[in-house]
Length: 427
Image 1 (cartoon, helix red, strand yellow):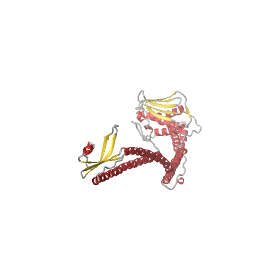
Image 2 (spheres, one colour; image 1 turned 180 degrees about the horizontal axis):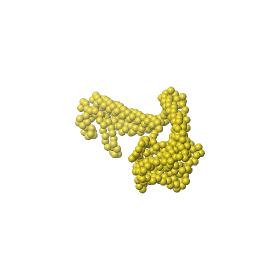
Image 3 (cartoon, one colour; image 1 turned 90 degrees about the horizontal axis):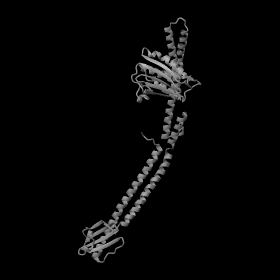
Image 4 (cartoon, helix red, strand yellow; image 1 turned 45 degrees about the vertical axis):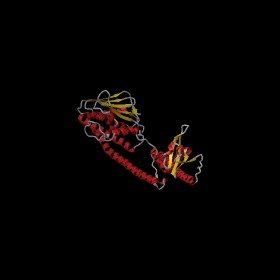
């Protein structure tokens, strides 16, 4: 899972790391150059001093002076044995000598050697104190690096607030739009820069989207209005025909089926019109619907789908249940759930059970896989073994209607035997 970090946080961290890395690199380069230059200067000075000392002794054999840091010796080939053994075979040049001091500490000094005129000159320069100075300088530089790193962090915080202010303002206004659902033009509030171009693009996209949604709403309203008229004609004509005294029982049953189909089509149109309005909460208009009554009507309307299948359907009302919603919405949802149970169950039974807070449709069909339970509510997805025609939209419509009214719809396999359980929990 990718972690979410704000743009300002990433900018501050990047700026701080850049400042710290640049300071550390500069400090390392400065220390390295200082060591190289100092070593070259000390080596050149020692070489020059030992050369001058040999020339001076050759001209005037007087003993060179020595100080606490620079000590000089002049020996001939015959008196070379008086010098330390490690020095006796050294060639002309400057050498780094490391010795163990009496106190157990390592002792480092530079030794300049010059062999000329039968003389051997030695000049020793103690660099131990210089190394202590280098350590102190190193600690100071490390402290400076951390100080500059902290300064980079502070500057990064200030710059990020300054630079990202337009972006933060744009993000804030978009959050307000998501909460309030009221779109306002963004481009006039920002300068003519990259953020202004982004705000202008969002305004154009919002206008196109609003126009498209408005066209869809008008289309749905027009279609629903136009369809209601022929459905009303069918319903009134069916009602008149049912009042005819010379109808046979078979014709009367067919007219009832036409009447139920007309009523279902009207309810479906009303439900789809509610969905097209995309309201945050489904309107109730003060209607209270008895769940068991709607379920009973849906069962009777779905009986013709059973045909000659060895299938029984029953309804069990354990507790009366009423919901604040139009009967048409609940009828569309139950028609899809009960109709699917009848379609997928080839033999056995379908039971509709009403309890205190929910209604469940329990069948003995092939069942569903647990991992497919949620996927079945997606548009265009049909269950395995689905027969006949269908676009896989029924359960998607049920999910949208339940979300509109705050209900929870789900499907799960039965534990005891084959089959599935579809349930709507009314909260």
